Each structure stands twice: as structure tokens, then as C-alpha cells.
Amino acid sequence: MSGLERDAGIAAATCQATPFACTILSWPRISSLLSFAWSMSSATVMRLVPEDAVPRALALLNGGNALATTIAAPLVASLASTSVGAVRFFCIVPLAAVTLAWQFFTLPKMPSRERTSGGATFKVLRRPQVRLGMAAVALLFMGQFALFTYLRPFLETVTAVDVSTLSLSLMLLGLAGVAGSYVIGFALKKSLYALLVVMPLTMAAVAAGLIIFGSSPVIVAALLVLWGAIGTAAPVAWCSIALAIKQPSS
Image 1 (spheres, rainbow, N blue to C red):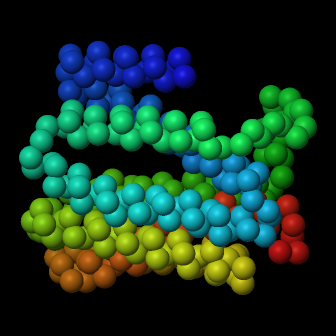
Image 2 (image 1 turned 135 degrees about the horizontal axis):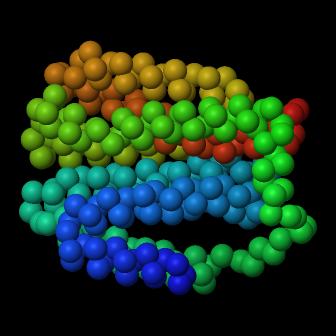
């Protein structure tokens, strides 16, 4: 916690100096912390539930993420025109504190089952399927978050929606994610590898559709619904691949 407190103090001091410097300083640290949290979430879920329930547990976890997007994205879009950036970012602080306290008091103790060296993680990269899987996951998330980063300016400038329509579009995106995370828990039991191929191709087709039909609010809304359903379900599929590698028969 001392590292997080130090980073928060540095970020707060920088914010008082220049807002731009605060943004440049904060985003890489936020991204690294989010990546750490997501990488640990899958491993934690695998320790909490039986192996046959892991896909559904991961779907539930990502469903919570989609539900948060449903609430947060329209809220932030509305706050964007009524408050300053510092106020919007500060809203994260009490939520993060509550989440930390909740996990501290509810998660059971999970001691390490076996001792491994610090380099054991890198030894896994000797397996070809692990290297290919990591490359595929990196490319998938690079494309997914690249689109999500420019989604709001795209809707505002190309589709030319107002704040109300923007909030509605983001809410539809989140609701589709909730539905997608629910369905993926059942679909993974039948065709994991097919989903790993079809979902990225579909997301690429959606991105191309946004470029072609970006000026049509109705078509863009439909594409965002499809994107939300697949984009939220895709991490569940990629996290479940670890079980498939462990048990090739599944």
C-alpha cells in the first residue's frame, strides 16, 4: 500500500501544478494497476471456485465490469459538461476505498500451494502455445481498447450525437456487455476455440462498420451493441484458455 500511497501523493501534487502533467503522469500508472488487477482476478477466481465453474465465475466477474460501464459511462458523459476533470476523477477515490475494504474482509486466505522461484513465470514462455496465446491476447486488447479510447470523440465528431444520445449509446454498450458476459459462460462449454477465432474477427468487422457507417446513428448504435456483447465476453474466453491448455481434452 505504501507504493500506491506514494503514487497518489505524487499525482495529487502534480495535479496542483498542471492538469496536463497530471494526466500524463496518472494514466500510465492507472493502466499498470488495472492490468495487474485483471491479471490477478483470473488467478483468484480459479482458486475460489471448482474448475468446471471457472467460466461462469469469470463471466460473472466481467458482468460486474459491464454493469459498472453501464452506470459509469453515461454518468461521466453527463458530468463532462457540468464539472471539471478533477471532480470526475476524484469520484473514483471513495469507490476504490470501498472496494479495497470489501475485498480485505471477504476474500479468504489463499496461501501458495507450492513454492516457486521468481523466474518460474518466464519459464512458461518456453511453451509455444503460451507465446502464441500471449501475442493473440495482446493484439486483441490493443485493438479493443484503441477503439474504446476514441469511441467518445468518434460519436461526438463523426456521428455528431448530443450528450443525451452519447449517454444512451454508452449505456447500450454496457447493457450489451452484461448480456454477453451471461451468454459466454454457457457458450464456452461447447466451442472455446471457435469463439477465440470468431470474436476477434467480428470485432474487426464492427470496427470497419463504424468507419463505413459512422454518420448513421442507428447503425452505429446497433454496431456498439454487438461490440459491447463481444468485447465483454472476449476476456472470459481468453482467461478460460488457461484451463484448456491444462486439460487438453476440455
